[in-house]
Image (cartoon, rainbow, N blue to C red; front, top):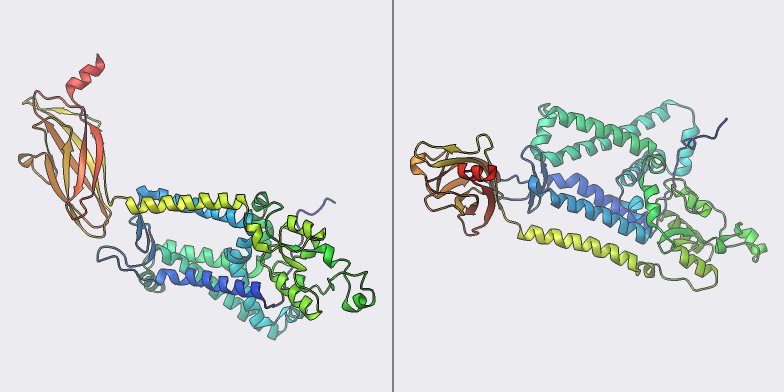
Length: 480
């Protein structure tokens, strides 16, 4: 028989512990869940012509709103920049403090932590849950399991429901959802996210981190001997033995009393004393547990601690312990932070200097021009006038680079009112498509020119769109 492809699944019942890292996990869980569930309900006044939801991905109108920021489809580079910043930020955090993202802010970790607290509420702490697992399926056990799974399902359902609120007005969508009037995709999305949250957070938990998530394997490329990680100082802890054994033979035993509390509190069931493992999410709960035990037995804290491998080697050789923060003062981290900050500054600069007026021009290709009976030449163009303000704006379309006498008109203006400049009104947060006809008098020839769009308000923003005027004489010159 060959070796098994993966370890047989086992249920991890972690013990409740208190300490600085556990309190920090509480804080991160409350902050991240609060942001996720509450953000769609925050209102933000953008005027009468824009939605008042603070964060909204408006797929119908192809807009992304985040407080005062509005991203249009042609500005997707802002979203790409944010994603790049997120990736570099993850590299920065991993290089500095190992898998701290996994330990505190990863969605799988946050929801797993939440479900584990639900377990404690219904089934008690670690020993009580282990006894309940082994107990026969009595009416009491079934009732307790059903109640706990109902809470799982409620949390999972609200998680899926909160997600769809980011893509439509939250109060309106909630009302329509419960009346059965929402779009089918809303119900399908909630169903999928409810099922995955219920199963991954309620039952698979650490198996997601060990087998499904690629990040534990990727992050090893960003760790080196100078990265802070949760480490068991074996030179100080070994040989393990109880307090009584150590009291009888103080020179034979180390500080570790082999209480296994570090294993009992671990949310993934890892024994940190066995060295670095893929299941360790660097949450620090084993540090809280070990520090409490060391305090109880009168030994110095730090048997399990955040430290770099270089610091551990030096300390094992007799050097004094180095403060963990000194590991953050290294060129690699400054480079990561510099790149991250430069991208952020560039995005802020682009956001602050961008124009809220945009113009694109597409000339007709078939036919490229029309020769009229009076000898004049007419070209047709499709203009897209974009108003990125949350209010209607009157705009002016003008031509630059054409000979004197050139005029234009649109489908909204008759040829009798043709002029070098036309005025149009563009609705708030809208793109107006305009058919424009440009007429060149007989005896004149033109090539490259441009349309200029100017907002007729106090901002006077403008945009220039270069194009080409097709003419029979220019075509003959090209053929020659």
